[in-house]
Image 1: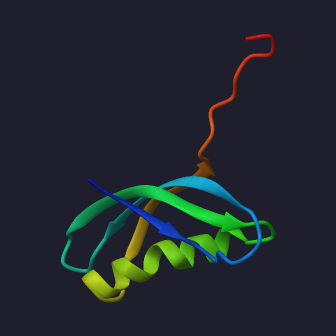
Image 2 (image 1 turned 120 degrees about the vertical axis):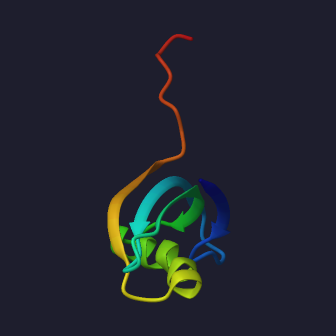
Length: 83
């Protein structure tokens, strides 16, 4: 599993960090899992995030690619109140 950190749609607006995990399979049966953190501007869609995450995978493995698993969550942990 490899990791990457990349800015996404950054500009002058504030961004929120999101952690992603994606597992893909190529037509030759190769499976690969990637994870990392992307920084997303307010108003960005989940689809835009997936497109951004998949671009380097398409460049590396070609197309078509099957997405076996995709998760995208804010990169913050909830804390209990009062601590």
